[in-house]
Image (cartoon, rainbow, N blue to C red):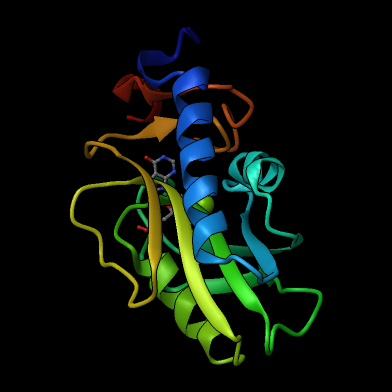
Length: 177
Ligand code: IMP
Ligand code: MG
């Protein structure tokens, strides 16, 4: 385990198993359709790569980058688009891929923003959910519920570090205190 972590909450095998389950569920729900996976950079990149490989449904991928104003461990809900999608999504079945739902403010903004572009459908998959987030009013696939502690790994960062860890764990509070 990385020395900056307090504990591992989800090891690589546990994550892989859950991603396979979610992919099977999504395959059933989207039978006969094509999905546009929209990854929210950078945190979702690892889930995006694993999900795209597990899905049997034809997919195509695009990415957005957003920044939410606020401290490095808490978002404010004021979101700025740093990189928009390359293409129009009207008429597409869009599945927004997120790393974690914390307050849910970032996702609420993204769902409204993408919803206004007239996709054929819009749904969200998030790897992790903190307790009691604001939930979007579109279908939501959720990987794991996590306690209200700061977690890193499998795409999630603290100050751009730890994204490459193949597992998810709780960061020692003294690292960000
Ligand atoms: P929200 O708008 O409060 O839901 O925040 C969502 C964003 O905050 C995520 O996409 C992450 O970038 C970041 N975030 C929230 N909690 C954590 C965490 O525990 N670890 C790493 N990033 C987090
Ligand atoms: Mg993020």
